[in-house]
Image (cartoon, rainbow, N blue to C red):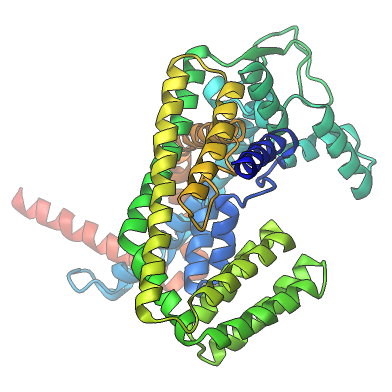
Length: 496
């Protein structure tokens, strides 16, 4: 009992130390776990080129890209259907003449709409970073590093790259407008601070840094803050529920297949793990480790190795973002699974897998139950700091329970969840989504406003373009139109 008590205190202490020491970069990652976006990026690197291209397009599409995509369809696809339309009763020259209107229209659309949407997007982003927009679109609690770099370039135009990096680092340390400081205010003051500037204040003179002296610091609206806390917890519950459902449907069959491979091919698996451990321990340069493992992965794939071996190596490469220690932990964990299952009977392996999946299901259910208690705590007015203490207590209690039940994995699903970080990242994500919506609407309005200019310009440019580039085709078109007018006039005169 004494040993268990000491062990429990150690777990609780470790969690609280993590609360105090854990740091967050201004862009993505925490120490201790890999953000979902980073995991997706690493997994995408293992995908075929076609899937990589689709993901790249999905992640980088914006207003200008939208215009270019539409212009591509207008300029290259539409002309094909116009020229080779079997249902059209016009002659081929007329269809060709009409088809060429589409590429010209596409180029003008990029020039006119692109020239207006890019400044609009830039303006909205600057206004969001300077606090001119409402709370839902205010980026001042988590200004991104790129924006700060631009500010420092304006303030220190003479600075070289090294000096600029130092200015950015100093600004992030002293500033109250980055994600780290927002997490601190959540922990210490149970709120989020915004910098609000009045765009229409005539007495407010813009400084060299892009900020206004008369800007003020305000707290987040209390109702919106409560909604933010609840939404953060709801998303965490949804994630755990999805994992629970996936575990119920897929985990057993996948884990059983993998364990059966370890049972029958344990030596082969251990040989791969020894190689991975050797590569990881050969250097502290994580890029070099990743490069070496990727080379080995290519060899496995080209040699048509068993998929379980490929998966073991791929999953370890993904963890390179978390660092060398995490990669070694992964290898050691897989090695333990191999030793556990190799040379055992099929029945023993199946029983062990059933127990392992049961433990995983229990961890998900326990996390969901606890997160529902957190929702009650929010309703009762508990602060973020108090809720983090609840997290620490839950991690300790789950560990005690897992030890008593002899679970293989005694760690709670919540061991790497720091509530203040989850809240800050959720707020950042929601704010970015609101800004994206504002950009979409604004650029649409701007595009519609310039549409009459684009149409007038097209009507002026197109005939002159055709006369200059395709004079024969253009003359035939004009002659056909003249002939139609003459025929129509003749028929009208005959009727009279």
